[in-house]
Image 1 (cartoon, rainbow, N blue to C red):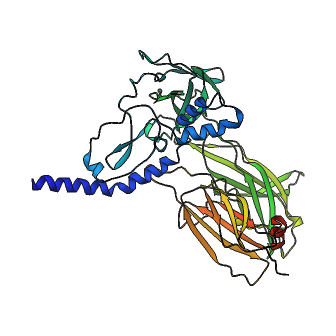
Image 2 (cartoon, one colour):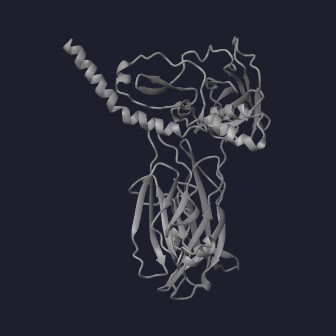
Image 3 (cartoon, rainbow, N blue to C red):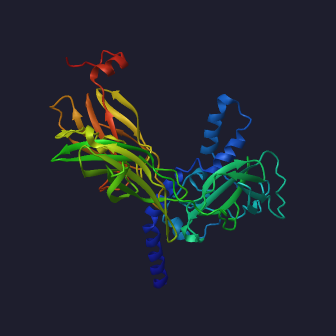
Length: 472
């Protein structure tokens, strides 16, 4: 009896220790209300709604969603004793999972009778994936021997894919499933959507207004017959003078990342001085080169000779298996004659240009004046979270320039799990540098933005209120 109680206590402690992980997972799933399956079902439910009420109909459908199927019987009384509330609505559970309540707790679980429940579209089966001319044709059936095949009303099919780069198929390298398209047909033709050098798997779900049985089993691995091409050369080369002193010139060479079938691993930059040869044409003298990380799209080239013509080139380098693929070199000529001795050209510092790496889409929505306080609302795109983890964003902002020299240049920071934030304690006629990172101690900003706050008169004019008094 004593041993049984000890085992029971140990298991209970283990369950309680897992509570943060479960709650973390639930928070991630709670943001999943616009998942493709639920969205498709609500689009069908609201298909007949008029234009004015359709948006509200979809919102109500998702918030009040009740998925089909029966929750499994309570098989872990200890889990119930821990009172872990991992969800409180079906809309917070992924895919076909339901929010199942056990005692004082709840968890997201797969229904036990989903595949035999009448009234739902049959589980599709991917029949074939083949190349035809310049397209990839994917066909699927409605399933085999399923009595629920004849379902009244409209049916939407959702096609998803996952892929990885490489000469050989390796299931462990496959990425997350991504929605390719929705259709009411049993086949589709994909043109210019699949990249050479990638391995793909596909799966299909059939959705009606009553619900869905989920996605089919994945198809067999598929890769386009045409092998990967070398990456394109960098685009839009631009040269800017930086400074000239001690008899040498420094310039900045910039470029745009090309659209490539394969991931870019780095760039290679070449430069050489051009002088007239004996027979007149330009000859190159001592070609120099330097590698640039894929995250950067510029390089500062130092120690150039004044009053000289230089030939600058940039090459994109990708990797496929053990082989490196190199693009043609994009090139541009630059004459250092226009840069004078002891001249320093003011190029906008790196942080004044929006730099987006891991966190993308950082932008300012609006600056808010309320009760004599200023705030700025910013948003950015979500960064995919790792399994069982929540992505936390570290927002940091500081003054970089202020018209009023008496304003203290303090730095502020905050942490949020949302993809929006209101920056506070702003001052009139000040410029702020804003960083949003996924790590607390990031040596290189993952995104940056400059916000310019207007003067008091601007807000007084906009608000048309006597409550706002501006100092003269």
